[in-house]
Image (tube, rainbow, N blue to C red; front, top):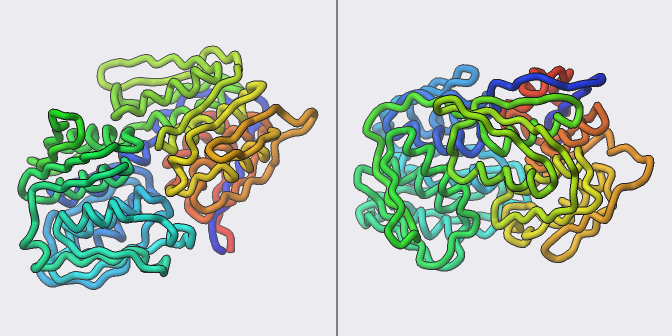
Length: 438
């Protein structure tokens, strides 16, 4: 399968300041909502390309130049029949399907397709239930290229309610996607969860970003949902550094002094990822000036710890490179059952730790790192499996910090998987080359 190869090498020390590593989740929220009121979003080139094609297929006037997407809030006058290609992760697929349901003209049919066959097995029932309540027919197929079919029809749209109610254990990425779509609707939408939200970090992050775009987002009094309004002004937004992305890059401190700038004081609950580093014995210094902050590891005393996902794959994204780079004697990556429907499985985490030089055993809900193979370097080449490309690319940074070189093979553009990563590594003295391969 065609894809990308990232080759990275550093001789000796890797040090310096990275000005920005854009948050992927914040970019998805902003790029999904920008068309509601129009405006510009500055994000990573990879995601700008994805959403430029998305809006163009829906018939909206849009331009994507480098790292800037501009969209005019002018819906097409006639229905469209479109096939849209989405990245291979359930948050992006859910966001694009939900927005298509409210942005496409009545009578349209939009197929959301992916290049990853594993996603055909994904259970989209909560997304389907929520999008249907926003005013569209939506169903899943067994064909990756037309994974979800969305039809915003007059018959269903006329039944549109200001209340979306979901019961059960609802994934946070579904609630986040519905919030982005609700910003397109003229009335305030109340999204109520009568059960439990699994992985609420992305919900709070989307809420922060939408507020930055001028969208009124308020938690409901009982804490089981949100009320979402529509934007009151055109968007002009620069995606900030993400805490997950910054912490991945910061493991290069194993080879020098590294600082990542451009972090907001708050990006939902993402700053809670600092606890993953702390548990592993990595102390990060977070300093702020005005609304912007920077982060740098200043003390590393590796220790045995448990990294628990709690429905958030970013805990694994941050934990794996730190474990590989700083090598605690033992570690546990737990809570992986909560990530199964996102493609992050124990056997995948076990494989990444082994490629990082560890002795690991996968169990039902966790992976136990038993130690490190003596006198053996991490693997120089990582071939990333679909579904865990983000965690694999993050692990490759840990290998780079440990070994000084790494070759990573991915199906997707590295700049879309971890936005800004190649440029960030180059800023601290790493020689980076990204190329296509057949």
